[in-house]
Image (tube, rainbow, N blue to C red):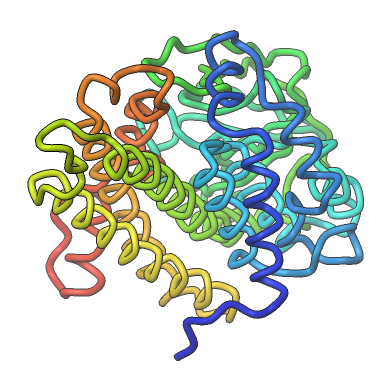
Length: 387
């Protein structure tokens, strides 16, 4: 078992860290509060090749895997710039299209995803079904050679920044009459597709939307893959990268919060001229949070390594565990940092309370901690399904 990064991965980590610090958390917060987007950071990351590290070189990418993309997610977050669209566009959409798309779909979309000039967001969650694809209400039906999509989606990130959205729908299997999942690449300006922004109590430059699909007409080649049989494997192929990169973003955010708090508590003096960090009541909670973040990082590394090795079942277990561990660790780290800084922790200037909403959401999305515990109980511990 090797815990060391390759020289190339070390160089990637250092380079992404430098880029993240060039912009920093104040840039991230200013964009979020003004209603803007982190366009400059995204475009520079694309020009430098960081957005396409997991995309094959033949399409302009770096030829790496989810391990490399997790490094990018973690290091930008550790610099105070946790970019959610790294998860939905390079991790989910690019993986799905690369693994299950047609040759034409790969040629059309992957180069733009690699250099950042194109963004494709992901739409699975629905108001009634949540993320349970067995109960999705969005339905695709044939109309000649075209498809017509009808349904609703919620909590869809970054629709206002993307040219396309990867929509998970259900189609009728003509041989059985049963509904089966299928994925469609839908232009965000398609007729019949409407969006409504959701007001969220999360400080983020990336917005959340409700989507309404009313007989959205799509050509046959909007269907991901050569046939409907590609739907289920295509859907699952995006879930492990999603969990791993979300976990990496959480771990990076935890590192950022602990670093900010550690710098403050090492210099802040109140009683007898000693730093407040010399007191165990301050130091121990920070140390505990640091341990939890490091444990999460180890599981993220394991999950990404398994995924890149093609060991999907093991990667599914490890990816869920990594997402759980990182979600808990990030929330703990940010809360502990706020407490250690006292009143300063609640100010915008010190840059930790600005992350409270995001790390709390990380315990819910893209899959809740309770559903992960259900998964582990069922698939690791051999317990009966409880839902």
